[in-house]
Image 1 (cartoon, one colour):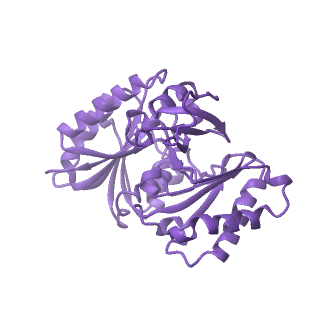
Image 2: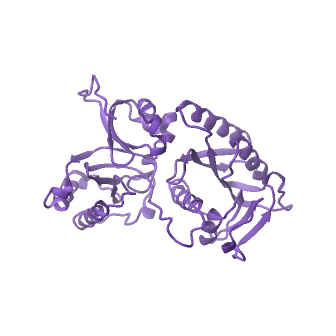
Length: 362
């Protein structure tokens, strides 16, 4: 998708890279319009390079939830790296010249198409980062987990279209990784379901907003079958009370920290005095009904306790309808003392968003 703007020479236009997941491709034009895109060029797998007079709209408009990641374009280098001799050295020296004095907390480089079977650009991104780290002054964040969510990071993406770079905080970018999310391998024979990848990514995303829950924290998981999320929580030394009318995968039998109730979520009643640190809901069915179960069980959630809620969207044909449903669910939760503080579209989400809420009062 490429549009020619009447005012594309306006000096106030800002270049921005936004990632609109492929599943929302049908409404990408509407999303970019809300971002004020005067021009847009498709890059990589699901990225759009836009020029806008209203960059704040990318992070603050209702359509922001459809952009998994965003980054101001402080440096773009359209080129074919595969046919260029000395690309890594040229790019590294350019990054030092352009960004060295801005003192980024860390430098992370990814691919425009992270799921491509061609490993060339994955290797190129790794080699470029290695060279950049050799010539830059020492950085405070050597790994993504060490980043201060509010401090600026130099993020770069590389692909067959060239090199695209900018500095912004992880929270403003809506992701700790260059590109927003780490590609999660689902080929392990120990993987129970793709839902495990969803909670793994959700917990990593959560680090931009609050510390990780301590080992031994108690989760109640609604609609746990077959147990992909359960397995990931247990692997992180969390305790899980899992509820479902269907059985869990047999590989979870006798796992330390797990209590399973073969029951309907609608009729499940915790024992008196039970307090949970977190509620996890990936229930299918109407989101209003799913949220009603969360609200009922939130009486057993400690103050500042966490809720991770998958908002299932019946259909995504326009920006308007999903946003209206989102507002409705958030308003219902807020009235019950559950305050929404973040939301995103995860790598393994489909027509759904992952919402993060916190219990604000007893």
